[in-house]
Length: 249
Image 1 (cartoon, rainbow, N blue to C red):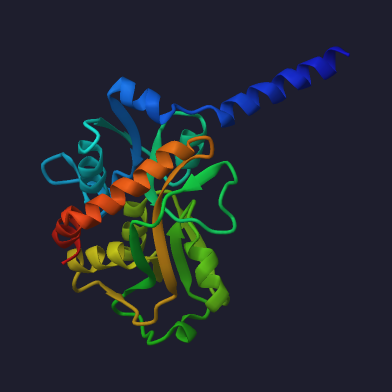
Image 2: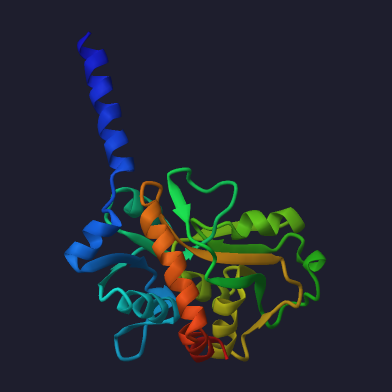
């Protein structure tokens, strides 16, 4: 009897944990919104040379929240903890390379995509690889908590895979030849080629397209709809295009 009661209490606590989130009205009343972002994902969210949080995601969410006169409280997330932080109600929005797919957590909802990227292969320049077929038995790295390896293995299953917790770890492993290649988004990969022009190159084969969205708790449908409207407004008033041109052209 006692055990049954304790189990019921635990289940109730878990249900409350995953269902509660600050409503859009509460966020407006508080005057600020908590946004989980990456601090090492160039050019989306990263610490620049002046020690300031910068990037496409940062500029875009600031612009959108300015329309609501909300202060943005940025909170650093990693590939391994970001979904848990959202579900634990430590964030209102998760804005960190999130994309909706069949494996997405059922307690998380997504806005309409705000950016479309391509998944590619970043290689050491000295590797004699022309197509994905040439990558048999190579060591391929990717970021934990993403679908990059899953997508890649559907096309090229004959590789050895290695997962890393942070993007700088991927770059370092590739630079030191601890791995042969990295599979990731093309925007990040292009930044690595610019930083290492004689060391890295991008394979011409594209694995798939990736649609990035903002993620929220399932109970926060009202905030999701508002974010979709704000995104449309940013497209219509040309502010999105200005931010896009700043980071991707």
